[in-house]
Length: 455
Image 1 (spheres, rainbow, N blue to C red):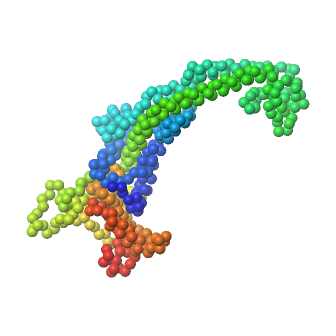
Image 2 (image 1 turned 90 degrees about the horizontal axis):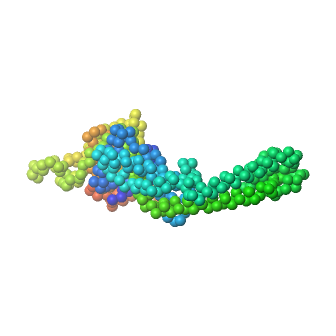
Image 3 (image 1 turned 60 degrees about the vertical axis):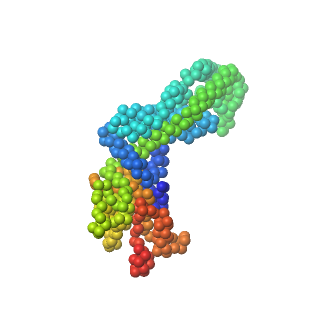
């Protein structure tokens, strides 16, 4: 069952997710946090809570788990499968993610006895060792293709260095020649259009034979490439072009390697994101000084395990139609309010009753209490530990519904009363006996007598 987003927004559950998202390490974990929804499946909720418990143990006993270096490289892998050539920095992100995955997998593997569920998640990480090694061999930490990425690249770069040195020698000899000094605007070598040139005074054009590549804004200076350097420059440029082609070939080869392992990279990112989510839950639980609630399964006819049902003649206080839910929150604190000023509440619905009416003066905390109960349920069913005292217990509800606050609809020209009534009609269509329903000021917005009758 998917929880209705509108009711979760009424409870401000998305604000909880934003606070949880502060504790993630990388973008894929953040996406998981912001998409987190309460589960209505008992075993899944129990597993989520245990994962958070294990992550808190990891923080307390081992200082946590570093996901540093992890990136969401799934888009890069997808691009590679479409034939895109990945750039060196992209490949470094992939290599860094694989290293983070191996580190996490090794650590959680060693601690499997203490954190079995987290170790199971880490077991889904694919090390892709050959890919990581090949990226490490070919790409430097500065994001450049290494000379030894291929024998051809090493040869081309060696030739480029030699050609460049010869070119510089020729140009420096021209600058150092005393006969050329009167013609030079400055004694320096510069570049125009990727070719080395020297600046000469415009009136001495032709005194140093060469090709004019540019002139200064005033026209007083011409930038010429001496004819004696043209052939060496051409050779240097040819080697540069060949070098670029070889770099492109190496990057294309690495990208094809990435494409072959696109699924494995996706599994690794998904596992790391899941661990990021669980660790964020642990950090947030510590921030709230939260405790893990005891989960209580629904039982038929309201009888808790181990209780005796009296014969009907003696059973004057029994609630035979009780859905079998439990809500026992002890010193529950609304997680979005200032912990220094928030007033904790105790809420108990057990075997004896399953409906609670809260009354009291305005600003007495009724609405905050309703929202607190709804948030506690939504958080627990999302695997979050709760800002409550030990001994708190809660059932796993199949739906969480809330009609809270003044929802007068200007767009639909509905009064406050009509708006509430519309919400309640929708709620009655979807809520079942295993739903948690929170109604604020039921029957408000109309005549008090009629409102109480409708309530």
